[in-house]
Length: 86
Image (cartoon, rainbow, N blue to C red; front, side, top):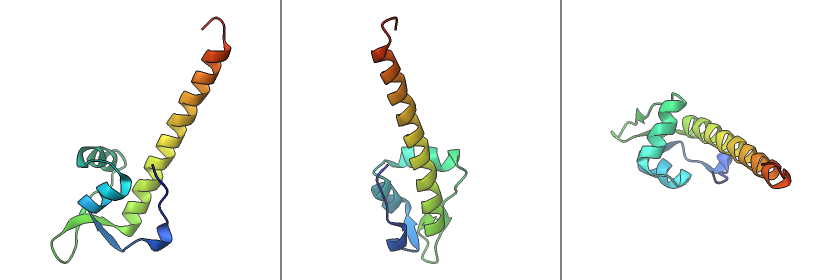
């Protein structure tokens, strides 16, 4: 997950904008939104998306998940490469 400057965010992002911001497709975004119980909302113009606070919450959750899984896999690879019995 790439870095996002939370201070420079808009107040509302459509689903397509969130996909571009997170660099993922709609299926992946839907998976994470459901996993972290974040539901799209409709703005005053009839566009479906997420308010800034929800985009930030979802980004933070995905970032932490990916960071932890990367660290775990890096630790497993390190131990395997240094273990002659692996």
